[in-house]
Image 1 (cartoon, rainbow, N blue to C red):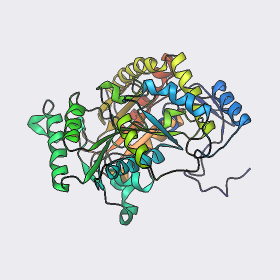
Image 2 (image 1 turned 120 degrees about the horizontal axis):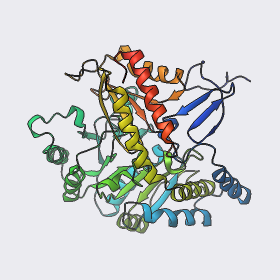
Image 3 (image 1 turned 45 degrees about the vertical axis):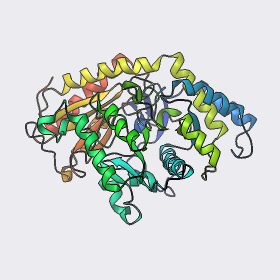
Image 4 (image 1 turned 90 degrees about the vertical axis):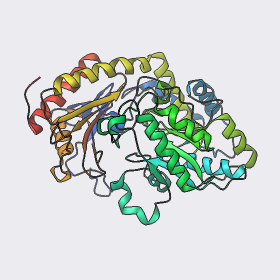
Length: 442
């Protein structure tokens, strides 16, 4: 068998996958890998859950596809009814799509359409520096990752960007840490004012930063402060929960940590735990009421997919039955403490941060000055490979410090990860870090 006709995302040396179960993956040669990244922080309920596969197959056996504009479906209605009470929103309405990027595109169009229906021609969206919201054009524009945006700048540069809470590298000096939220709110206020009254449609942000900055947790008063600014200017708040939703950070959604009630919410990744390409753009009741009254010009061939809904519902039931959201909080704390213990003697480790089972390690050339490694040294890739050589899969990140430099390693294992697996992950990361970066044993 050959992959010569595949436009590959990886190199020729990739192993060929055989199967997975729980937090483990196995290649065709029988080698076992501990999946400390859930793929791309996707897998929540674990690999090989047959009841989810059976639910998808059962729905496909009845009907696999109908267009969302032609038929309503019991599968979608049942899923929406089950999920709605868990969403951090007032009277939520689901618009299912095929993944996170499509969800962001949908939410951006919802925001624009909402204001147009109310007689306001708001055309600007504000994102945050260092953020990642997807690779489709609108999602990439509102993203703040310079390296990802650079090849496509002639198509972009309509969105505007403000600062992101990044406590390890906070620029607010004497105001840090207690004044950080106020400074971020002030910066957002000033940006909205510069853009002009009545032009900003939405503010899009991850409640906890994902891969772009490596699991940066904001100050506890941050979301109240920036939400108040948005409300004062009629700007919709869009919470990007693609990476942080469905229990990843130890609550159903990261918004729950601070009581954030967004106007729009986007989800993906853990929504179907990798068993189906499923994303969600969710409108709050007030936004949906305006959109449904005026018509929403938008749609995808595979939106409102019946098999996707059946898969999402099956995943949701596993999360609830196995109490995996609470498990994420518990095991996330264990992983955080284990990483700090194992990496304590590695001088190149500047920070260990995160919430729940979304944890990150930031790597620096000098711990005292927080100076990042040069990108040419490919530190995170080397550390990723050293972990992989030891049978543990982690997720690399770069550019957190200045858009080019700044290496992170992200860990986001399935929420079913065991105590022993958590300890193994941390021990392997520590051992690999000492090999690649130097430092004493824990």
